[in-house]
Structure formats: structure tokens, C-alpha cells
Length: 101
Image 1 (cartoon, one colour):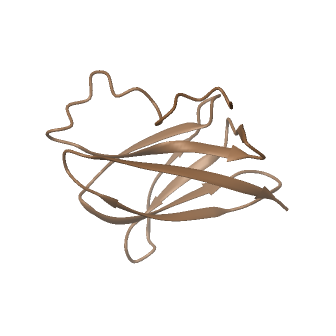
Image 2 (image 1 turned 30 degrees about the vertical axis):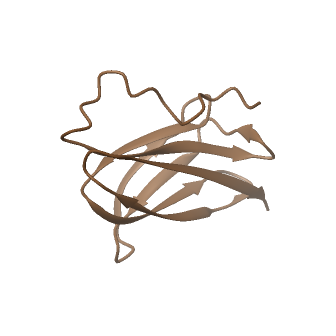
Image 3 (image 1 turned 135 degrees about the horizontal axis):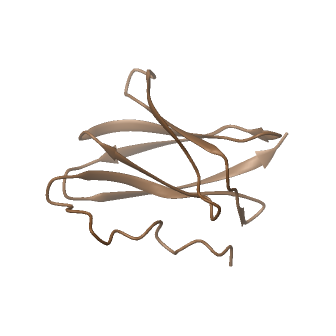
């Protein structure tokens, strides 16, 4: 097991009635990738936000409802993209596995 919390970061203190959450874990060869960058791109591919992953590879965005692309970037790795639908009141779990270059 990679050490990341199953299902992504804890949602303690997050009011999901008012939020659309996109969260997950970035891994490489089954291990968490700390210090990677995860980008949130809108439906047209425009950059919206970026966060670094935690030491356990976890990330979280609070997003507007809609369809998004989540992209993970790290040195010596091929970027990984996933399409995700964010809905107010819900959590979209996105796990991104990076491949080495």
C-alpha cells in the first residue's frame, strides 16, 4: 500500500452541501508522488488552477460544477490526464498514475 489515505484527503470540516470537490492521489509505479503538480483545466482546455501534491501524493480542488480535465506533472514522467465531472454536494475521486519517460 502506498501510504496515502484511501479515497484521498480527509473531508473533515468540508461542507459538501456548498462545494464540488475533485481530489485524489498521484502515483508512479504504485508509490505516491509528493511534490508533483496537478492542474485543473476547464472544458476548453484552459488552465484554471494548480496545486502541488502532498508527501503522500494527495491533492484537492474546490471547483464549479461541470466537466474538467485533471493533469498530473512531475519530473521524468509522462503527464497523465483524466476527465472528471464535478457536482455540488459530491466528491470526484481521481487517481493519476504517472509513467516514467
